[in-house]
Image (cartoon, rainbow, N blue to C red; front, side, top):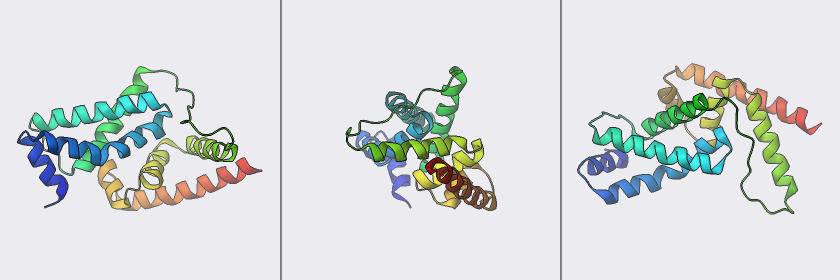
Length: 171
């Protein structure tokens, strides 16, 4: 049995400490995932919180969730999609506080964000999960409900397109 399985069972039995442990384990991943889609700290925090509220609601409602990590990401993805359905325009980029004298770091981050925005939607999603969230290709396959070969193709294509975009951006 995995530690997630045990945590989920404890949460179902009303163990608040287990719920806190679960949130502590995954909050930073879910927050970063939301932030990479919105580039807005407050919005990403709200989305992460909503993801956990929905997760615990589904869990306490008797839903069979399978792998907790995959279930969290699928909820987060739905929260993100709903956010953009409600908003017609995409939010302006907001960077976290970075020291002013570190302009190179800001430029690199902006280059990466611009390159990521140029990717086709399905390749962008795979790239975020693989490169920024550190999910394994098999996990991405399960999460997105697509074949592993398609995930491998999208990761390869993302590498190719990101390399081209970043090279063009530096010229």
